[in-house]
Every structure is written in structure tokens, then in C-alpha cells.
Length: 269
Image (cartoon, rainbow, N blue to C red; front, side):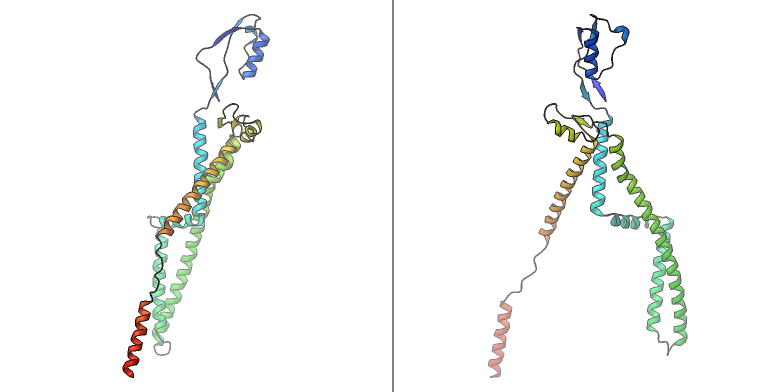
């Protein structure tokens, strides 16, 4: 918290007791004892004007960004994000992508051998069938091993992503309100709100008359949820308007067919 005084300081004669009470009521430190002399002149600052430090705007933006990220993740889904990142990573030149390509190759070879095995008769072509059967079993065993290895790697990848997601989103959601619980995000205009409203907005430990970080976080969550609902509704209306109506079958062709049937009956008569 920084305090910015008015450009001019007023010089007033006052007693030491009055000056001590005045400075304490304004939150300023008491002058040294050797300077408090009855009838002496002191510089008494006017009412202070609160000026938020450079830390507060960055904290306001940080809380808003965290809530936006959490809302986006909840809207898309953690599973969908994990699948998308896993697919993108498999295109990079890393061991994981190499293992995935080997698994796809083994699966293609296994399906090829299986089709040949199904097309071969065990009675007419027993030697060929036995050879294909051995290849089929070998390919299946290799494919199962590769699949288990890939699933273990994918499980580690999902666990890592879950940890990163918790550190990036959930940890700031709880740590920042706890650490900055006593810091005012900004001050409310004096006299605009009743005491109970100021108390609620400053809950839990911010100064009365200010907006606490918890209140700012709740406000950001509500506004982001409202805008996300509006965006989803607009997208739904836009996609619903583009859907073409199903064509309705016309009746004239039926009448034409009935007319043709009547003409054929007349010809038969």
C-alpha cells in the first residue's frame, strides 16, 4: 500500500496530544518524542488518497486469467485436451512417436496376416495355414507387448498433464486468495455502499471499504461463466440455422403414377 499526499502540506499549530491523535487516526506514524512540544508547528498531512501499487493491477489480471483458463479447460474437457496433446506429440521426432508408429505398423501387419489366415482353408492348404497361424500368433504377441508399453507411456503422460494442470490452475485458485487475503484489490467510493455491503465485499480479511481478492475472484468467475453461456448460445444458434430442412416428398409424382396405372388398366381392357 502506498499513500500519496496532496501537493501542499498544511502547517498548523497544535498540541502534542492533538497531533498524536490526528496522526494515529490517519494511519501515519507518530513523530519522535523529542519533536512533540506544546505549541510547536508541525506539518499535518491532509486526508490520504489510496493509490494501488503496481502489484495490484498485475494481481487483478492474474486472477482473471486463471479463471479464464479454468473455464476453458472445463468447457473443452480434460480428456479431450489430453487426447489432442497426445496426438500432436506423436507427430514430433521423439521416442513416443517412434513407438506409436511401430505399433501402427505391427497392427497393419497383424491385420494382413489375419485376413490371409481367414482366407486359407486348414484342410486343403494345411501347410500354408500352419505357417500363417504361427505368423499370426507371433504378430499378436508383439502387438500386445507394444500396446502395453504404449498404454503405460500414455498413463504417465496423462498423470504429468494432470499435475501441470493442477499447478497452473487449481494451485493459484487457492494460493493467491490465501496469500493476499489482507490486501485490498481496490477501494470503493466512500459513502456509496452501506456498511454490510462493504463488509461482504471485503470478506474475509481485507480492510472495510475495499474489495478483497476473494470477492474479485467470485466476480471474475460469474462474469466469465455468463459470457461463456452467451458464446455457446450464439454458436448453437449459428449452427442450428445452417442445418438444411429435410426435403418433403411431393404428391404430384404419386398422382402421375396413379394416372399411369389407370391408363395401363384401360389398355388391358
